[in-house]
Amino acid sequence: MKFLPEFGIFWMNGFLFILPMLFIRLTLPKLMKRQTSNKLDYFPPVIGIERIALKAYFILNTTIVFSPLLFHVRFENTIIVLIFIICYSLGIIILTLSVITFSESNSITTKGIYKYSRNPMYIAYFLIYLAVALSVGSILFLVIVILYQVAVHFLILSEERWCKENFKEAYNTYCAKVNRYL
Image (cartoon, rainbow, N blue to C red; front, side, top):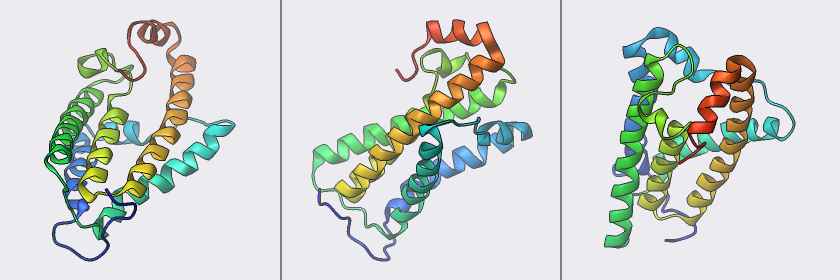
């Protein structure tokens, strides 16, 4: 891996791996239920460092989604390709299952993949973004993905606080049974 990715206009760019994720995240909920999009787009109130994390999240997420348009896909060795395939495939599968399950619930989502993780969508995004970093062979892009994940952690804390306030004991019981990440 190099520090900077190879820049330019390429037909085989990193954005090709972002497109399926965008389709799953933006189109699948609309096909399932209209109100799900609003539910997926809701950010609970943030306090303290969470305010900085929310701003960082928007900046880093936008960078991660659109900058691969200019990054040439270049796999350097077989191990990188294998790790890419595993991360990307798992990310797409987890994201699809998460969106479907989340779309079916009007309350706390505790079924399906949410029986194993309280935040499978964020895990899926991380795996997909990690795979894109591997596909463009950039350490800088990988650092951006890691910073994104740190910002996401603080947003998850704000979501959990909101859920505890709104779903009270039901959410506390869920938290006792299911881990935040894995």
